Image 1: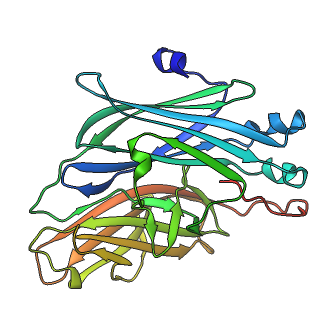
Image 2: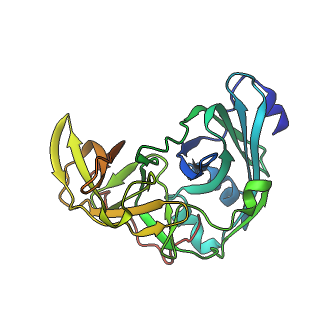
Length: 300
């Protein structure tokens, strides 16, 4: 892993896709969740060798864009226990890793590595991060996180994590609302059989009124406005942090296959405060029926 971090040539033996977002913790700290998705082929090696479990290392390094100094890092080891009944199911599923780093506002370079420990295969992902500073006199929004899965806050029996570093000591994640956690869609591709969950936060200036805060979604396709959702109140509100959390769901049944833009609009009725943010996703037709599987997998 250390050699891969120092190398200027990306490793591509293990295909990995990564999605990042930003959620403000306070005026000087931004939580950057990092979600990585490994293709089903990452687990097929364990099946061919007859292994009952697979272990993965995930590591990230964040450098200041101007000085190239390391300002944040994480390292996780994930052990996925697989029984024989789940092998066939896992060939049609992906492994999704969730981690995160706390950073100050600024511009950064992120390098993320995933390693399948027994074979030694490594995959690399690199991107840039621009974290805007807090503007105390404006209503600001977090990233729009898209998902098709929300689960109760519990430890999955088949996944064991070992987190290292200061960021692992966070008592709760901004993605946890009402005893549930949203699992981000890394590729943002959904089927018409799924429900789309859109999660985001609004950060209120001191003069804004939380009681009159409302948010809704507008959907576009090919530049044309298609539909919108009713305006709703926050799912949760943190008075101390003046942070409102919204989670809006929409069944995708009846939607045509294609690419879409979703725009969240947040307004504070009776005040001049308003803000919006956008994200993009794709909808595909329902997959063809597959052979029956004896028991579902619970790997995340």
